[in-house]
Image 1 (tube, rainbow, N blue to C red):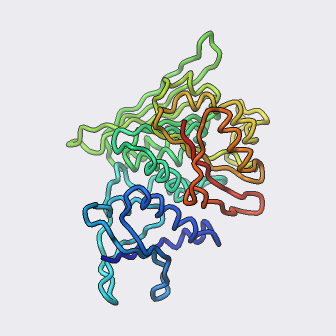
Image 2 (cartoon, rainbow, N blue to C red):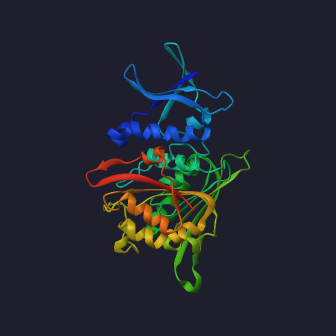
Image 3 (cartoon, rainbow, N blue to C red):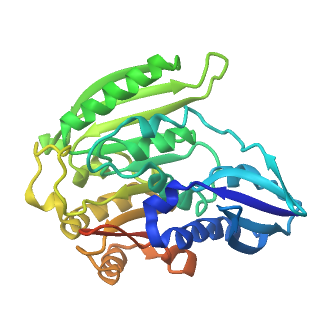
Length: 335
């Protein structure tokens, strides 16, 4: 059986000349795990771009996983010269427009964020009750994308005003969409008052009939203290978008020192803490601006902190130019 996946045209706007390389890489990571496809290629059909493949494993129901790929706009079964549409599997815990509602300068693209989470999801051996942490979460795009997938989502952001905005936005969204939820705020401090922080907490239910609550938590604190805020080996996935070294209007200067826009200094001070809260089978997926830190230097830093960096071809295919000042790439590692 042959399938054609209609590619969302926004991917070509997001990744420019690297779009097809990145699309193929995301698909191949899934294929390497489940081994279901051959003859994978990008095709132009009547002016629209599709990823096509031949299904070689009828014993695996893979269409639900394909529905989650960040680039897939539609799924079609190919029968001779005709394309038969197949409904995408809807696994949304909350509506998938939550990430796109917020518009602000410096926002990480939600398709790119979904891509990073998908990479991690396909590298861990776990399908439910997944705990995701973004230790540099900004206004929370990664947390919203994780919540769409039904993960328990935790974020750390140094600017308290930004975390307050996350709380206000999510509360209004859940009320408007009539989700059942409980919310609260908690102030706390580290041992010997080494730091002060505030948690903004939600427990969210999809509907009244569903008893499966998901936990959402944003903390206003310095990411250096991640392992003082959360217990060891608690997270399955850590995903984050490092500072690009570019000043954005949405970033608060509150409690931020000059190194916060320097990825190497932030990593040197934070990686030990992040490693402590990642479980032994967990995956770290981080994006960064290669103009500020070369991949080899990033890899050496991760290795020195006790991480193993993945280096197979599909996982080395995500580099792309964002603008004149930002050349973005992704690095993937485990403990």
